[in-house]
Image (cartoon, rainbow, N blue to C red; front, side):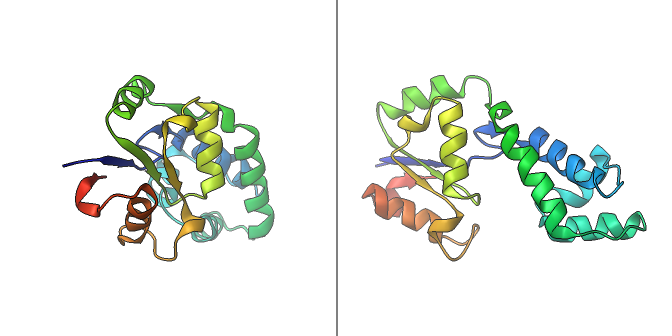
Length: 162
């Protein structure tokens, strides 16, 4: 019998990609590199910022200071985190699920980020556990983060869906 449901955060519960894109564009503008949406989608999404910025610098014949660009990206992202919203109707769905299941978040992002985003959207209290990148060694698709969530929820993996 299913007792718990685990969710990813970015792209599943919340639409954070527009902010990631604008934050990368903001950072790269400091190196006089214009970031198109197609370059972001094709070269930057789901990739380390360090590799992405290095490729964009090479393509644009620029020298970059990764630490400075990363600081610009993080600053812009943090200042605009309030714009990250739940996908439509998810608050209602999560609230209804909470009546019958234990709920958890398993994300590749830091736990503190997940907590902030959930607080901004008024749903942090609906989740029994939040597992972030600082909680485990091996990232998804390895089972470690999911197994940790099951352990903290007190359910067997067979009693959980993700």
